[in-house]
Length: 292
Ligand SMILES: NC(=O)c1ccc[n+]([C@@H]2O[C@H](COP(=O)([O-])OP(=O)(O)OC[C@H]3O[C@@H](n4cnc5c(N)ncnc54)[C@H](OP(=O)(O)O)[C@@H]3O)[C@@H](O)[C@H]2O)c1
Image (tube, rainbow, N blue to C red; front, side, top):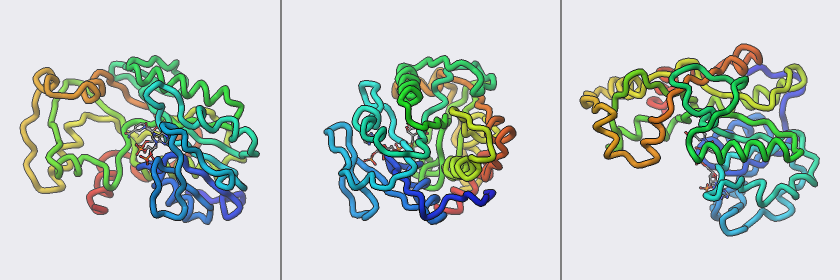
């Protein structure tokens, strides 16, 4: 990571709204740079840096949580009605704070099905799933909010503790083959590091409101699963053709197979110069394997 003179440091206070898989990794990484980071979850926990925010029952953070906040990252998906939980409950509050930056984690699902073609930020979103229409509406609402928003579109997120290894170990793995089907992915460390890279270099780089964070090599699910079985030293079960497997899949699992796209990271990695830590699933999964 390139560190410039304007590096983030102890004058910055981050609120990470939604401290799940990506949010907690981001909080850990930003703290290592000396920043303060408070994180939200829907119920109380023992972490002294955690506070409760739950749009489902209207529990919003106390006033003092917002004191001195300079940066916000929202990692919370749309609620069941398609509303953005943060904008629904906190937009007016956020507009009273002098924020330097607000980040929003979105999904590459907004691009819809490109039948295996590459898709970039320059392409018009073309959502296919209902949930992706909702997501695109949330993106628009963030853009129109008047807040200093930057949106990150993410494909499948994996990392230590959430990867194909867990699916194999928990016997939840389904080895399915579907011709020409690929998926894009991103290691959780690259989400955190790419965002921090952009923040650290923001005085030097052109601002882009929407940025994909994906690795270099979209590929089939089978390739990934085979690689994990090989690392574990187990034999991979014989793949089931998608048409046979789909009857057993939940509607949500089926929906992932209905879209086939390669997500381009050229804006992030070529134009803006971010260097991926895990450029493909092999190096990323090696890291998961060694950290489990
Ligand atoms: N997982 C993927 O592969 C993937 C791919 C592309 C995009 N995304 C999107 O990227 C973002 C981060 O993903 P992730 O997998 O890191 O998320 P995650 O682990 O599922 O965490 C989501 C967080 O949002 C909080 N949350 C959910 N609903 C809420 C509500 N109504 N009010 C307040 N807080 C709420 C959760 O609270 P608790 O901590 O209390 O549960 C949790 O902290 C999400 O928007 C996700 O949809 C995910």
